[in-house]
Image 1: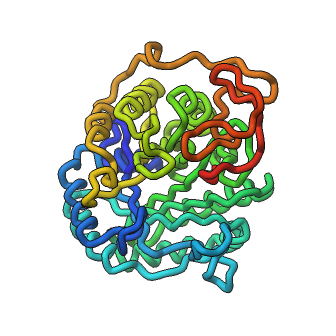
Image 2: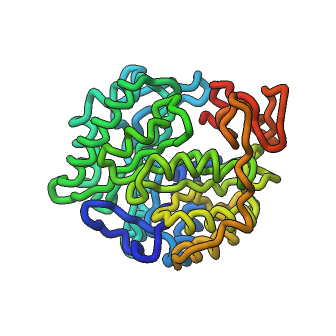
Length: 377
């Protein structure tokens, strides 16, 4: 789900830039796991969208069209398509996805496809070497299903080199250009998920490079969750604001509940209020909500929770918000650390307690492990 400012409410193209107020990312419309939906949940998702058209502009769906077909029992970064290499648009649109498209069109809600989480560096490099083929595959999907008006690329592979980052930039530039001029269906929006941090350590962290690619939107996943508001603001939001222009930046906000987020700051009304205040203060134009899921018999498995609606309406109304009463001071840490470097160290994924540093100074993390944590960030 993507939320924008008041002046960008219609999901139109302004001067070649896509602005979509609220984009909700949903999982696979199939069976009931965290990212998969029963028919009841699909209906409930549509009901939520209908009732909140004042904030929802776009729904990004995982519909079995993927760059890497993952086997979750296999090692991370394993693909099953394209001879085990991945890096090729694969799959047919699920029946449930086809079924919801007319309703979304009727509501004036944009429908885009999430091309699935791709954790394979080999798959990413293969994708970069097949730019034209990738773009034409996406265009063909929209020509078959004109209600699909955009695509979201989610490369979360560990590692990569500066050359890979440059190749990624070139890929995004060319694909975005081809989707802009797609015959009979263009322009089509093209977005990519990133994880902006103070340092560049993997393919999705080279935000300053990718920001110059011309891709329509870079959606920052690092702002999904954090240990507290200070950690979120200084370590997750600030690098994205420093590296990506506002007219290219989408700020991701996590709202799901699982064993890692339950009973943490992330799922509280206070968290939603503080984060929206920060985004208003920074004049952020787009918010990307993950995850949209409704219709579960367990109310704690329906996302976003109701308190988010009022906060997103506040964001849509625009204006400024005074951060000074709620933002803690940035802690001055030893040389080995970077302020609230929440995601740069080895954090326990249950209670967000640092487990690798022998020394802690107030809220300061005193190490930088260089090892991806349980979030894969």
